[in-house]
Length: 466
Figure 1 (cartoon, rainbow, N blue to C red):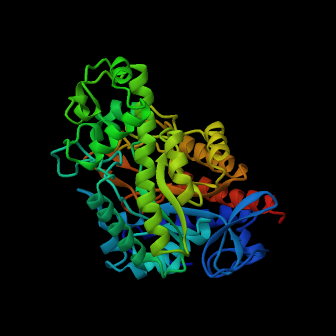
Figure 2 (cartoon, rainbow, N blue to C red):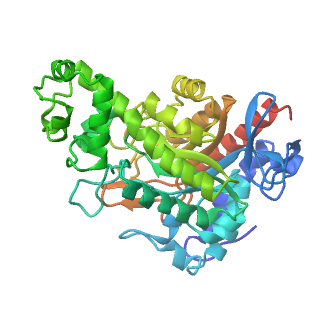
Figure 3 (cartoon, rainbow, N blue to C red):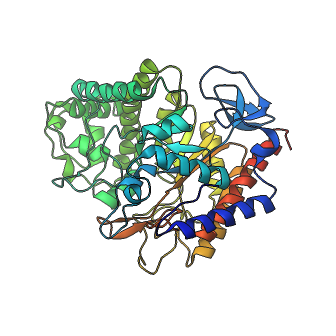
């Protein structure tokens, strides 16, 4: 056992001992019984080895397959790089315990991962990417929920994806992204923009605008404005009278629509709502064509899981546009901004089943947690799916993970996050498994450990292994 010396060493050592005892009581890790390959895949679940991670179905169970050709389920933690960015008043554990050396942290993390049942990391720390399978994500457009208002230093943007210059810029970003990761055998899959705001009604409530409205208000000479007017002309078969009747306008012809003050449009009109939903699909098709084609061109070997959708913010026309370019769908149950999504403290079985039915793809739960208030931080960033105490959050977390892997199409679960960090711009705690001083949340870690072991057993049993 690695013994951590210093101010917080005793509590960490006792925490690891407690977790190790729980794992032993639960029957030990599946790896001890079956043996793992160098990537953490089960050697007794054999599939075709291609030298890269891929997907397969064994006995009706969706599985990741390691480069060596063995069944694998992704159980990991996101935002590990947050260790090096303590907030005001938070101990700089990265320097005080690990001397600012990721190699030293990797040694301790491997010890923790072994006992806790994790096998996957996110990207952002090169040392960790060399030691574990990982997912690489990149925000390719600024549509994520965490971007601020126009004029702020971190402003959101709905780009004109019909503009060749914008398309070239996005494709170049994809090329750079792929160049960074394409030679790494540990890469499981690419993930694109995090928490993209697609749903028209939810986005309008959250931002008082949306991608369609932003395209509609572009200047007359812009490619997006021309594409939108051409879409209306096709939709109404060049009959301007029919269009005027539907929109309550009095345009002379469709050419005049290049100058119409569309922001004054009544968005509640039936025809406007219908057309906006259809044009949203046109935007999605163009956007995914750009990023999907570029990703496949610059890295034909690795899997692509696409954007990290919020559950409840995947309009069907958007999903349909993405499907030709992705191997699986990545989702995040719950939301931390507005109570307009299904809370994430219970596994959304019906929504997940429907998403799988429509997409026909395996599903990765790419970012999730069930949090709880602490004495120092009564507010956490997941206010719409939290529990009152650590014990209740731990039980709910275990139930969520077990329920998720009972679905044969779920291929992985990534927890948000490793260590506590106070998010000043949100005025709330972003909660981890480890407190900022290195002390474990003992109950949460213990239940997560048991749930990870159960998830592995569920998957293995479904794949015909005990």
